[in-house]
Every structure is written in structure tokens, then in C-alpha cells.
Length: 399
Image 1 (cartoon, rainbow, N blue to C red):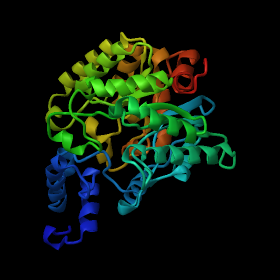
Image 2: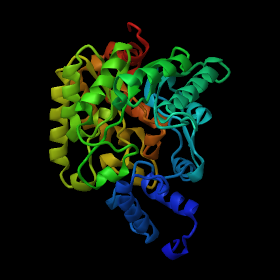
Image 3: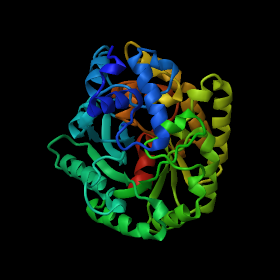
């Protein structure tokens, strides 16, 4: 184990920080630095990280690939069932050898399931290096559209990767965000379908591990809603990522804009670490109640997935080998069933959240688990959740 006294190089510190927390020291928000250094110190001392949440990315690509090799890829169940992966990312972080690009995604979707299309969701990847700060997210749309264009050539198979793009734009710009949205639409090749503005917040140590930290109740900020109104006028969907204690914020937004579709990412992210790790029963109850309130808003749909993130406290990433689909289905059953029972099959869509959730299970394994958990449902209901709802929400198709 590396000794702290032997770490002198800033790049080395940055690498250790990223592996311990998922964040760099360089350029970090000052409020986040304390949490990062605590996690790094624990990592250097060899303390078990399963007792301290340190971010959602806990392995670099090499280590992750080695972990997945411990469990052979499962054959796909019901391989003809059409699937639209409603949520994934692409990125390249050379400083820590963390990469998930088109070829990596194609390798995962080529494991036997009938993935007909995917929805690319922003992840702060490939921002423009130069130009006005507020326009830099345009670079990610250019990047995603490039991957989509490559996939659309047919050279790499039939899957329409990134057939819909959910970008990031700073809605705190108010009405001035129109400039950003217009440019993103221009470079998206007709694929821009929505905007995600991530707002996870918790008044605990968890706030140290958010990529773009924001104050509490950002969704209620008048300036944010001014930008939201401009986004809605352009016919775009809004992806909301919050932690479960913030579900009331999404409820307020949904009620204020009943004509705008709001997609709740990662099932509302029930927390299971930090101050929540010893109160899982109450967390589940509060999360379920929050979903029930949101489900009263017909403009809200939910993405069922994201359970592989370490912040959920399910600890799937800590297993010596990845779980099988049966093991995974047993673990996810109460969460998946609650989502479906609450929103109904007309307003649920399955997501992989890869490569984030790749930290916890394999791609084919996840889709097998979803299939096992819905095997008792009708073909029509399953078709909606596996593909048709995503097509309706993100592609404007009456499915």
C-alpha cells in the first residue's frame, strides 16, 4: 500500500483521489476537498471502503474488466424482445484510465439481447475546451451525435446508439439558455430530445461526492424555472436526478409545469450510505411514499435502474464476483416492483445506467434480471417498459 508520505506528484494525488472518491482534487469545489482527502487517507491506510461512501466509480477500467471476467457472460433470456436502453453514458477520463466509448458500449449491447436503440444522457463528457463557459456543454452533444452517426452507418450493427440525446444546459441562465439550447439542437443531427440538470443534494458528507454540487431546492429557484420554461417551450423533455429526500422538489416542479414531461432518473435514488445506511426500512418507506406522490402527476415517468450505484447501499460492487441475474433479481425485486406498482407499466422504462452501474453487474445480467422480474406480466406491458415507453418519451413515437 502506498504511503501518504511517498505521494508527491499532483497527478498521482489526483489519480488516488479519483479512485477513492470519483472526483479529482484539481479544480474541485473547496467545500468538497475535505471529503475527498478523508477518503484518500482511508484508501492509503488500507481501510475497507465498504463502510465509507467514496463515490459511484470505485474501479478503473482495467480493474473493472478483471472483475467482470470472474463471471462468464450470461446468455440472453428472451433474446428477441426489443429493448431501448433508456439511459447510458459515454466518456473518456485518461488521467485515471477510465474509458467507456462506443466500442465498449457495442461490446456490452452485443451480448445477445435485442438492443434496438439507446438514449444517451449527459455526463459532463467532452465539453468544449474553448469558448464561453455556458456554451461548453455543446461539445458533449457534438460528441454524442458523432457516436450516433457512427452507429447509424450500420457498420457496427443495427442498434441505433444515442438515437436520442439528453444534454446538459445551465437552466440557471434563465431565458438566456435559449442560445445554448438552439446551438445544441443545431449540432445534434435531429437527436436532441431533452435536458438533464442534476441536482442531488444531501445535508451530510454525501454532498462531497456530487459532480456539480448545487444548493438545496434548486428546482424551485425562480431563475431555474425561467430557464426551464424556455426549455419546455422548445418541446424538450426534462430528466431529473435527485436523491430520495428531494422527491418533493420534483413534485413541485411537475405540478408547476404539467404540460412538460419530467423523467425521474434512477428511480429517485433511494440512499443507503452515510446517515441512511442503518435506517434502510425507513428509507424504503419514505422513498416509496415520495414515488406515490409523484405518480399522481401524469407528466412524470420513471426510469427503473441505477441500483448499481454504490450510493444505494446495496453493495453489489463489493462482491468478489459479479452477481448472477437470479441474485440480482432477488436484490432488486422490492425496488423494481415498487416502481411498477406505483407508476404502472405505461410510465416505467428500464435503463442500464452504464458504465456507472457496470461497477456492480454485467450488462446482459441486468437485462436478464429485468426480464425475470417481469416474466409474469403481459407481452404488451413488458413491451412498453422495455422499449415503447422510451420511444414515446424520447423519440415522439406513438408506441
